[in-house]
Image (cartoon, rainbow, N blue to C red):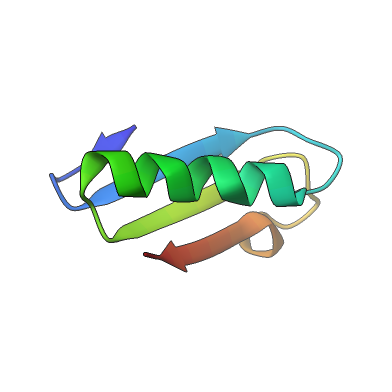
Length: 56
């Protein structure tokens, strides 16, 4: 998902974020040309614990 032509959002509902999930977001950033992305995991008690910001 691309928000505001600035940020790539990758949404997950996984037990925990794995390195493959981070690699997937980095690949999306490289291919799209965007610099900032967020990996959001909804399978956590507090949503703030499931958000990871990544910069290419």
